Image (spheres, one colour):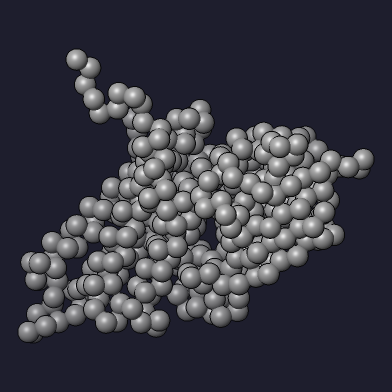
Length: 372
């Protein structure tokens, strides 16, 4: 199998990296956090680069690219710890393209591609933990359409988004709806998350909504798997930067008149960090390459990838802080923010323990056992 990136993919990576290096410095990010954790100007800049159009089909004004291109871009977003939820446009575009009616696609996909509309996934409920089949939100059919009554938590940029993809029970079966933030009965309460990005509680009380698909659970599983693959890629980008910064620090910091990078014990720890990064990178590739496979195979692959990524994120983040010493936990230093970012990513769409359970549940009956 050829794991080399094509010229187009490499050019896409270069464009995203140049934007991060030029327009999204650590100081810019700190200012963005202080301003609320989301900037519509930054979102528009991502749209001008064409990044919000990556997964939108060409017939709806998008670039029609696939999972590998999305992975390449999300790695670069991770390098800059970009706060704006670009992964949500990848999720919304793919779910609407796969499950939406022609009318829904025509109404929303061009606006997602242009960046005019930020559509985010609003699925997390307080008592659901990470179970996608647990849903208490209710939908009711009316003479003019559908209404939703729901309370969703930790919705990315929920008080800034234009619309939400919301799973809800319709006649006892989970369906997926598109709910506009401006709809009657919709209220949001925004707040900063641990890594400085923005989220919100979203409530709807008999609010009019559009049915995307009655196959709500299948659509939600696809959405979460796309989000998990994006988490993997973003984490690789963060860890790549952590490695670079930590290696530079070890080469600059001196004890007993020599750089501490010359100490064998520290070199071994840095080598272990590099090994975990490369394991994470290979599993991120695996996750993205499996997104187009049948649902059972795709879900199994994503769970495997998230277990490894969780282990790698925890190890690399903790070791980086340890190797930096006291400065590694100060708010003024970038490594502390990278550690918080990795910690939050590890818990997004299910923590490592949850995904380990998924891997176990999806094992074949003879997994790891030789026939006799």
